Image (tube, rainbow over all chains, first blue to last red; front, side):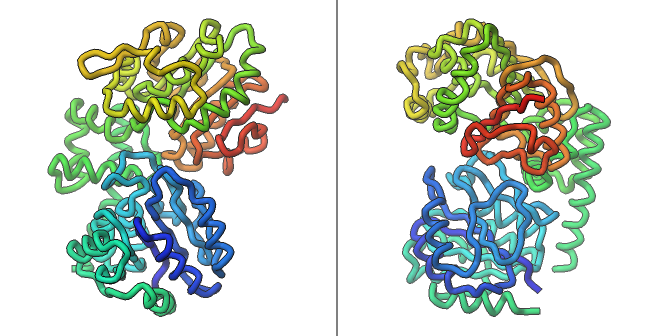
Length: 188
Length: 280
């Protein structure tokens, strides 16, 4: 049974998340951790927006938060977000990875260490290669991997890089992703 | 294949605590209460760079090779910093902390985890502009002697100079950043007058104790690397070191929650993580 969902995206990511997250039900079984590259901007306005349109509770992650279902945790700008093996969140101000902090690779890899084959990883639209290595880590630990179809993504580089690096389980259109996630969250 | 993979992972999670124990026994540097994901990421990086096949193999090396241990200290210490990092913090500091500092005849400041010193020079510039530097004694400490050497010299690459300038302006700087350094051979060197009130010293937050009573402590983006127990221990150390009504400044994503001193401080700026020790 899956235990957590991680999502990584950059350019076009906010719009993509607006399609996926509000479509998930209040009793969605997996906690969700998101890295969205937003440079030095802050998360406040879109966290507020997503909260107003979603049934899940959206928040910017805080250090040492317990990872709980019903919540969507966004990485704060300028910090890497990691999953500790007691299923809490930790941050690091380590150097950027793929010019990115937070980095999708860092989140995905640490989540894979903790959740092993009970993790679902999703790469959406984006303009760099961050996340490809992380998605492969999830796959290597036996987790489930999804990528947005690069042909129709706002920016194809990130999903393409993920497909090149990792033998992914599902390549889906943006509007198909939430249903697949609901299906994966219900699997035993 | 799946089976093998999970066996390897289990081994690593056994090996890392043993490795950290070995480092502590041998060299008295204690990383056992650091955040596990952070340590694992750094050790895996060293393992890959050094072409080791396992953490155990690396443990054998670290026990017998001091030079290798020094490299490892670099991996495990936190050396990402910049001038006026988080400019909004310095702005708030000018507004909310400086007025209190001005009431003290003499000001002792502890900058804990100062790394290569960019934030120490930032603080010194701010204090100078506020007319306070001459009556300050700043203790800038780190456990990594290599970064302390860099901090003492105050010489930095010009790569990030544009960012430093922008940060300085955003932080409410009153002059020009270039007034405080000289440019030579592609590096900048900060005016040594800025550091004449600063003592750079080796101090380990994990294993060392209170060394002075101070009016202000800055320790930004260090606690995020610690587990709850260690965070609690270090906040205790800070609480003990501060005078009544002394200020504590943490990193923007750090807090006092989960520590026993959560209620021993008043929020001065909850967003910029500036706290004041309660009286009594």
